[in-house]
Image 1 (cartoon, rainbow, N blue to C red):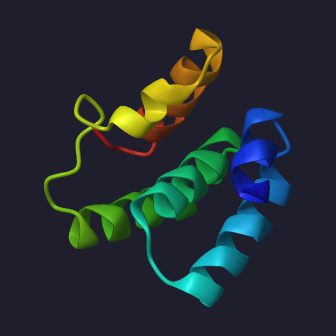
Image 2 (cartoon, rainbow, N blue to C red):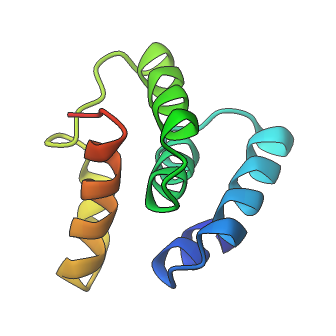
Length: 93
């Protein structure tokens, strides 16, 4: 959960490190992959964000932002929009 909390707090480097550790330890999971993509995007690490987005789509070909309900669980609408905008910037739709 550290990766999610760090992302929400705007600590993107911490989020990246936590998500990478979780992926290494627990394997691929759509939420981890999405938040890692978004954190890269927020830091302007566009190549890494786009590569992660492609990896996410390869594992989850039906993924779409409009159907991804997890992003809508934030209490603060600005947090939701920041996450979705970062994912859009990485090329996800």
